[in-house]
Length: 325
Ligand code: SF4
Image (cartoon, rainbow, N blue to C red):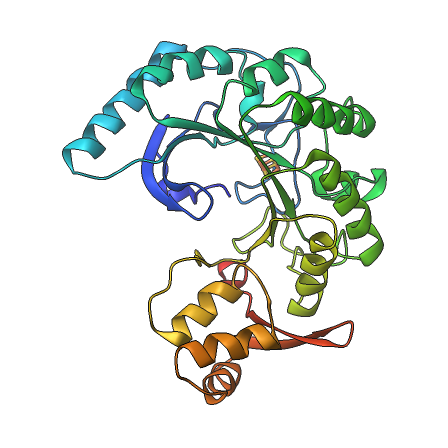
C-alpha cells in the first residue's frame, strides 16, 4: 500500500488516491530506507539500515510543519483529504516521536492512519502510540518461522512469536479501525496450508478489513513474482472462510461499491477486489440488461479470468501491472 517513489517528497506528499483510505496525504517520517524488515518484494529496494531500536529521525515540529503546508496547499486547490497517512520509506514505528507527531496533527481534524509492518508491536510503547491513530494496518505475510524469514528477512533479534502476541494484544485493546495486509509471493507463502494458518491468525485479530496484495511494482529482488490468478482466488477463498471482510489489492484501484453504469467497467472493478461467483456475475449482467457476451469479450481480451475453486466457477480481474515492467 505504499505510494510509488515518484509521488513522494521530503516528509509529506500527496494527497494521492488510495483504495483503502480515499484521498490520503502521505507522511514520510523515516528516511530511506530504515526498516526492521528487508522484504523480498519491497518496492523501495533492499533495506539500507536494518534496525529495531526506536529513535528520533526528525523533530516532530518539522513533520507537523510539512504536513500543515501540504494541507493548506490542498485546501487552496480544493482537494479533499480523507486521511493523513504515515507511510514512510521504512518502518514508521521505528520513529520514537510517532505518538507525539500524531498528537501534533490532531488539531487539523483529519483522520490519521499508520501503515506498519507490525514487527515492533511486542513493545508496549509502540502499541500505545499506534493506538492514537484512527486506522492502523499491520503486515501479516506469514505466521510460520520459515516463510516469515524468507519473505520479510527480519532483523535477527526479532522473534515471530512475540510479534504475533503483540498483534493480538494490540487488536484486543485498539479502538480504531484495524486492517491487515498479506502480500502473496509465488512459491513462498501462497500454499493452502500457509494461508489457512494465516487466515486462522487473522481471524483472531478480527480486522475490519484483511487485504490480500500481490507485488505489482518492481521488487527488491528480481526473482519475486505474484502467484497466478488461480492461487490468488484460492487465497481469497481460504481467508473468506474465516473472515468477513477480505479484499484484493492486485494493482487496480477498483472500487467494488461505485457503480458507473458501464457493465464492463463495473465487472472489472468489482472483480479486482472480490472474485465473483458465476451466479453473481449473471445477476450483475441481468441488472444491466447485458448478456454473457460481455464476459466472453473480457476473457478474450485477457482482462478477466475464469477460475475454478472447489467445483465452482469464479471470475476475477487479471492481475495488473505485472511488476510494473
Ligand atoms: S516492511 Fe515495508 S518498508 Fe520494510 S522492507 Fe518490508 S515492504 Fe519495505
